[in-house]
Image 1: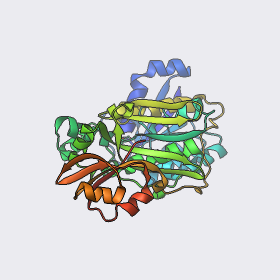
Image 2: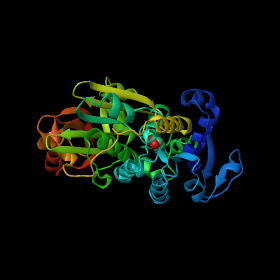
Image 3: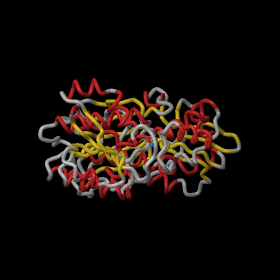
Image 4: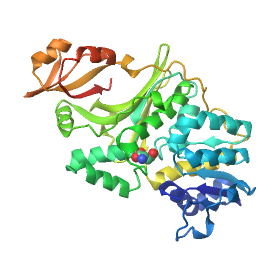
Length: 396
Ligand code: HSE
């Protein structure tokens, strides 16, 4: 019998306990031994099927040599960081879905895991149930990765889909996403692009091999997005999606999160509801796309439990996951060249005065238009006399 512990019994922690119980036969067949949750660390005891396993004392996990893997689903950096370090120090593998902790402290925790000859695995931290970090680091290992972009937040994609397809109000769609267990404890991280920002940092760390500091990554969410822009974009053959994007540049790399116009013939344009999609561009493979449920109890738990199984089977540990702590070479995404969508309070003449020839989408008191490919720096210069109501990049 292989014993594991779970720290935190929220949506993901509960899912991990359920997957271990409900899929016990498949898991045992693959591991050769049954897998059992022995202890669950909680802040407050509550009644339910796991009551007998609960403790509020981390030492019951730390000092229990029969526990070989700890699944951290506490979230955030404080207690999760402290207990992860102590579990690794105690020689236990740690598996997590905690994107904030991996984005901010992953490099340090991976180094500690290496020192203790155990695994620190975090497939569930990006894309929920979608296998994307393993393919990036294993199956695409022979490539130079030039770009990674994707819909990385299930809550905001769900809200956008409900608002656009069924006319739901923002607040109602958010409540539904919370009830379905998609949203973070504080949904501001979802709405303002911070959750997607942490995920693009992890993808960039692994893709480019250098730490990307989340504090340097511009993150814009969907709170300022207007349905008017969604409709104008759709009429012109584009969908609007919140994207995280990381690009290799000649001297370094950049990353950011923002709503984008996506041409409707790009498969990512049709990704709706809680689904996420990640496109990884390798110099040998070209574009490879990963698609699936990006949030929710069972999909996220599926990735965690697979990591538990891998941690137990990887002999002695997975070496290919990791990146340098060096943050040099991170550049402002304003260096990137793309087309831009604008909606301005003003006329086509005003638009032309700033950008020369533009593609007009609407002239109706306001003017909506697309520019040619320009850099973010040029946008800042050329648009400074315009009354801007909306401005978004078009995905190249
Ligand atoms: N709140 C996150 C989302 C959960 O909506 O994508 C999965 O990371």
